[in-house]
Image 1 (tube, one colour):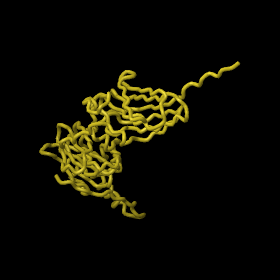
Image 2 (cartoon, one colour):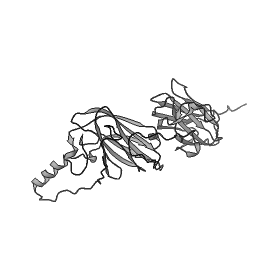
Image 3 (cartoon, one colour):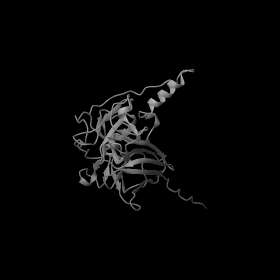
Image 4 (cartoon, helix red, strand yellow):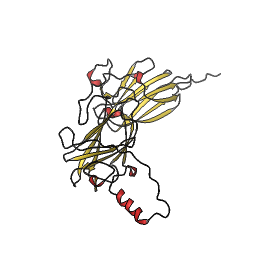
Length: 319
């Protein structure tokens, strides 16, 4: 099935005094086509997070017949609004972004990408399931419809995954690229500034494709993390001494990995139930690179809290 491109176009309101019949004809025609402006369920991901396949369950199918739409080439039945509206951050990696559908019924896939182009696929790699890979996918909004070839809807899962640029694949489930061997602090994460007495809480996605269980990274740690740190914490104790506390609360069993200003590695798994925490006594000024990992291979949402407390003042001696 060929991929068809169609640009989003701006529309002007009908001039005053236009025939009512013309307006109704335009509305009737518009109802025959999917409309990206209606918006779907909002989801977000980025090139690093999507290195691990991201899965989104849905019901495929709908009441619109793509064969009756002149502006989009495709087959199958979809809803007027997209199933999902994905906000994607390419992180300047230049990776390809693949979408595919996993289900037991015959489905189709329609996407309006961040540049406004339409893409369609029906059957990939000799199966009844669609897949398409967008090369060097830019950051932006991707509106996604999962349709059915027949009139009945069915349960399905949309999968989004990033791949190295230009590996020659055209769809389906290609061979996974070799995973990075170890976490790399020099890549840097989201910047956080913290001073003595301050507290900062951030949301993040825990986990990644670096497997620390292999013991190949010369560190006492386990679980799964991303290659780049989730955060780069710049700490200024302002001449005071005291502990730096870092704790995680996640939707799954999480881990915590830190590379301190001396490049020493610090790790914790379960401090409270299945959630990790570290207390760095008399923390020195400098950069702390922080990874929020998972014990298992699946990613999950998590929050991390970083707080710095000054040491209690020494009691004053008196007469």
